[in-house]
Amino acid sequence: MTKSNVVLTIPEPGRSELAERPYPNFLPGYAVIRNEIAPICLEGSRIWAEHDFEFHDDPEHLGHESVGVIDDIHPGSGFRKGDRVIVFQGDHCGQCHSCRNGLSPTYCVSNLPDHGGRAMIGIEEKNDSESGGFAMAKYRIAPIANLYRIPDAVDFKYAAACNCSLGVGFSNQEIMNVRAGDTVLVGGIGFIGMGHIISALYRNATVIALMRNPYRRGLLEKMGVQHFVDPSDEDWLEQVRALTYEEQGVDHSVDGSGVPFYQEKLMAATRAYGTVNFSGHTPGAKIEFSPLHHVIDPAHQLMGQHDVRARDREHLVRALTNPDVQRMIDVMVTHEFPMSKAGEAFDVQVSKQCGKIYLHPQL
Ligand SMILES: [Zn+2]
Ligand SMILES: [Zn+2]
Image 1: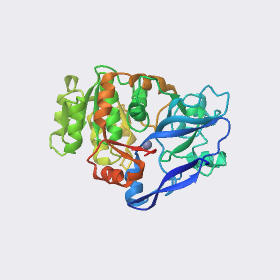
Image 2 (image 1 turned 135 degrees about the vertical axis):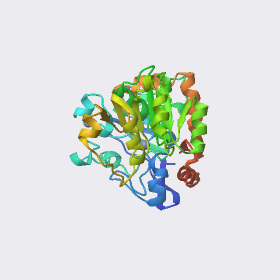
Image 3 (image 1 turned 30 degrees about the vertical axis):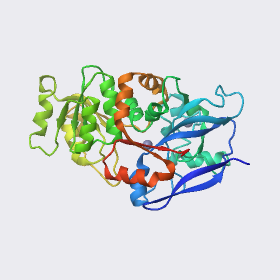
Image 4 (image 1 turned 180 degrees about the horizontal axis):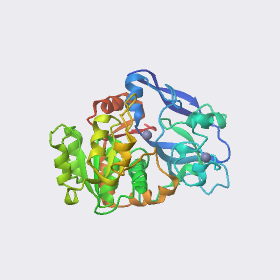
């Protein structure tokens, strides 16, 4: 019997379906991974509810985060069949600014549409494969350069947090230089915000959550967050400042919402020379921006990036061996579903009564 692939599709908003495809074809430099966990990212909101796609996904090509086992590989790579790996999303050219400097694969020219990149659909095209570019599938093709061997002591469940939850927060905080004793204000909290919070607590920073969702507040309390401020309170800014050293304001702020309601407050609460990180994006949302008032006057550094820089992978995976990080990931992952029941998983995601949700592509 020849092996085939099974991929998840969303043929119309609010309906998912599994579809059979040929087993992936792959070139040297790539491997085929049998996906064990595919965490849900934006598939569970804009795609499921509105069929709103970006240049790199469509109703039959879904998912970018996954961990699994190498199912097939050409000889000479340093990996073997059976190796457990994290797949860091996207293609790899090896010869662009991002690849040469150990930055995030999202900024590799082979993934950037401005440079003719086609991201994960481009992986299928380059490999002349009828399936496998994506994570919500039984089998996936990935460039060897974007695979990381998982230590034996780390379960797939923890390794799967290395993409758009803990991974994104951790890598952004390496750039922000979040250190022990710092205060980090996180606003508009979904799974990206939770990833930032796990990273900040791991670094022994003090976390203040600016949020309203009571379900998610309960999760953060379980993680160990002690300070909560409701952004609708008239004195929210005084409350935040009162929690910082000499009421200076927070050292770092992180937006997980993508909307000005939080972004403006986070910038206002950050001390002089502090860093402001944008990690959330909401389609169509725009903020009114004044270089004088938002950058020069407060001497703020504004930054953000997608995904995980390659140079941060080892320290990120080392964090996964920490029992307290594992405990916090257990809190963050509120739901797990077989991929055959992805529709139920997406409905939970839309309800916002969840942390991070994992799909199991083999089930
Ligand atoms: Zn590149
Ligand atoms: Zn993601």
